[in-house]
Image (cartoon, rainbow, N blue to C red; front, side, top):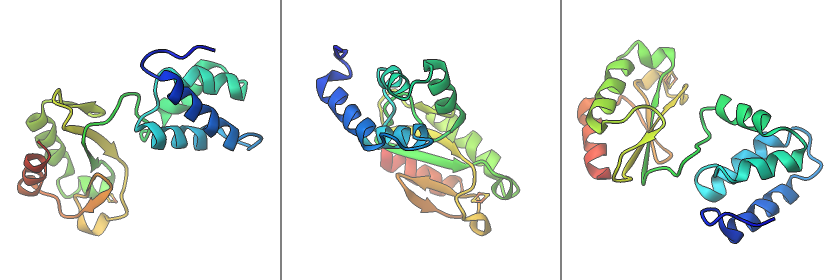
Amino acid sequence: MSATPEFGDAGLETLHEILNAHRGMEGALLPILHAVQEAFGHVPQEALPVIAKDLNITRAEAHGVMSFYHDFRENPAGRTVLKLCRAEACQSVGADALADHARGKLGIDWHETTADGAVTLEPIFCLGLCACGPAAMVNGKLVGRADVAKLDRILEGAR
Ligand code: FES
């Protein structure tokens, strides 16, 4: 099989290593998608048909599973990944207004990345920080009691 220029032979080799590491595992699709995202920072479009073929499922099935879970990205993330909690406890203490502020300030919607590649905005559903909401996560680091001022400082640092 020939690799596309974007994905490259190295990418294909990495993907095959991931597939081999999960060979014979029951319910391998999710762990494979996680491993691919960890290796590439996202799940490259070119990877999906290879994964589907290897698992003997259709491309649509693989894509359906991938899009069901909010964690998987189809495109490379920005340098800063800002996740804002959208779950109930955080909503009750102002998460919606905070999300509106972030989207307005960045000029992007959920799952999008700013044109300069600085920030990707993603929703997340409970970070286990409910008592300190609204909760956020910045490049894997938890942020409690997020407010507009805190968010603005984070975004300014990211750009
Ligand atoms: S509801 Fe937001 S951290 Fe739990």
